[in-house]
Image (cartoon, rainbow, N blue to C red):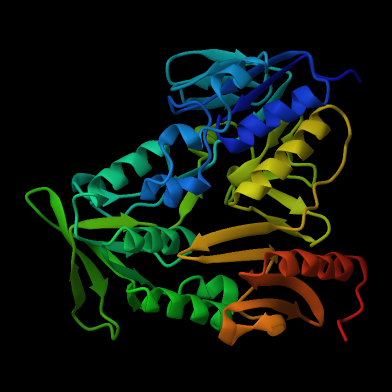
Amino acid sequence: MSGPTSVLVVGAAAAGLATAESLRRKGFQGKLTLLGDERHLPYDRPPLSKQVLAGAWDVERAQLRPESALSTLDAEIILGDPAVGLDTATRTVHTASGRTLSADAVVVATGLRPRLLPGQTDLVGAHVLRTLDDAKALRADLLTASRIVVVGDGVLGAEVAATARTMGLAVTMTGPQSAPLASQFGPLVAGQLAELHAERGVDLRLGAAVTGLAGDDGRVTGVQLDSLFGHGRGELLPTDLAMVALGAEPATEWLASSGLPVDNGLVCDSHCRAAEGIYAVGDVARWHHDGLGTSLRLENRTNAAEQARAVAANILGEDQPYTPIPYFWTDQFDTKIQAYGVPTADAEVTIVDGDVADRRFVARYCRAGRVTGVVGWNMPKQTRQRRQEIVDSLADPAPVP
């Protein structure tokens, strides 16, 4: 069977652009189209909560490629026109403006949509952070505010809290977990993260859910906490700004009538294929990881690039399953945390390098005697070396001695 003569990538962020670039690097010479819902040229998202938000980078520096480099792709780049439907049989995408785009292969790279609190869109000063425009709007408000409540105790919430605190604002972080990232890292590492934020002046109000936002004259004035004991209303946290980081959902609503399997992402096989000629990549893709024996959907920059290369290869006939060792990092204050594999809160955790007391350590995560993850705190070289233990554990089912 001959390869495709045309490829349409729906999504013009990191995963979509990386797919297009990988196709060209691998020798694809056919028609290539990149369709994006935003009006910006492709940009990187990790700096939005750190360098861009803090003002250390201007917005142009977050752009993934200069316009001159994008022109060498020999691709049609359509921006500001969201996909609204997909005809799976003909691999035809319909857009909000009325365009009809067809290709031999379609790559879904539409990413995520942030979750909102009830009534959030009605209040000035209530923010999310997903896009470049979100980052610009939040930064503008941070420059004139004195205090912010960050609603969310995951990676994004913790990063924004650290950035805002570094900018001099009074910062409160709230969320249902006992410590930032507790459900992912478990009590040891998450406890260290809570200590770091508290030492730097972040007011931690954790362990209670947020029920909504309070406002006055159309502007946010507070964040309402649920009662810890289930009686009456909980504490109202006064604030100038609220940044809601309660996670995000895969942007699959435009696929509702496509007939494709959608369940916490676009469901794919081990080759990241949802149907004949239709693939998914990045935050929106939920695929079967043959090595781990389970379905995964990863929301991080590293996966966007690695999965894009795998999808490009499979479009061109290499027919290889995608079996990465998951990896992500987060920078908060002067701390870099790196995680390989799938660390979980219920794993057995052992410090294998460094010392927690020195805030330089590597933690190994094991379940049923097998290494499932490693997390490093300001020890990048040693953490990278420990990654091999996960590789070895996948290859050899024998328990770690």
